[in-house]
Length: 249
Image (cartoon, rainbow, N blue to C red; front, side, top):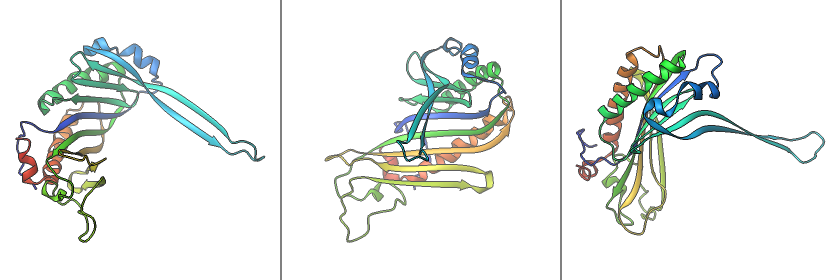
């Protein structure tokens, strides 16, 4: 595993903070839209967020099956004018994403606090139920076809000896539990398609979360997120070899 430290050129493509809530009774998309506008955030409105439902029903008389499709708007997606931040205000919660270039946890958390204050004041969620921070990394590995991924990825399940060694794609996912702190981490390492020449783009996705039951104004909310960030860092560096970390210093 790699030593934990600040990586000047970290391969982060998206870093986000997510706060899942129990909404106030009777909250609708129309009320959400009336209560929060992009101007409140200093952002501009990009698009509504919708959810879809598809139903397939087999009839008893053996006729053509019945299908129905429904969609509903559940939130708003807003972008900062420099396109560095994307905010989602949903009936079920709030998410803030920092896009490339990532410029540090402090800026992400401070912007999240600013926007969460607006969201929680205007929509008055009943409780906070889940907190998460997720970092999606795009590793660009200087590998040739047939090289072992274990050079850069610590404890990755490798190709069996005797089998062809050239890897076209792979997907490895762990659902991990921090028993002491009742937190969870979903760790995904994946290669969609190996290119004919370097670099090889490997996705390293670390999603750390905890189920909670907190007041929207409880300062413990931010303490939990700080812990989840620590857990994320431990997982990220634990998944890399020192040689991989050196690529991003």
